[in-house]
Amino acid sequence: MIWCKFLRKSFNDFYEETSEIYSLITGVKYNSRKLKKAGERINNIKKLFNIQNGWIRSDDNLPERFLKFQKSNHVPFLLRFNDR
Image 1 (spheres, rainbow, N blue to C red):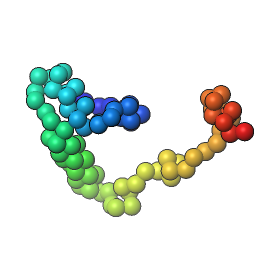
Image 2 (cartoon, rainbow, N blue to C red):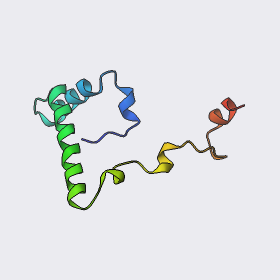
Image 3 (cartoon, helix red, strand yellow):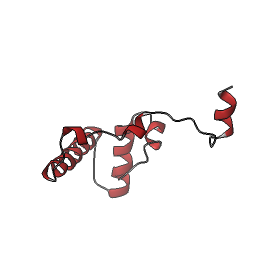
């Protein structure tokens, strides 16, 4: 189950509520601890795959453009209004 990164912030307890939704959808009992552990394992497998394909530690970072806020004229009205 994949959630948009913005949706994640709408949960009070992300892992607890997601595990409940997962259990309701699949019929498989899953608690927050098991869900978090599964997420860690998925992330570790993804990193192992990348290492096997030649990635090094410096490749395991977000691109610079994701780390810097860029002002633009193409922003919603409320953001432009609040910038004044």
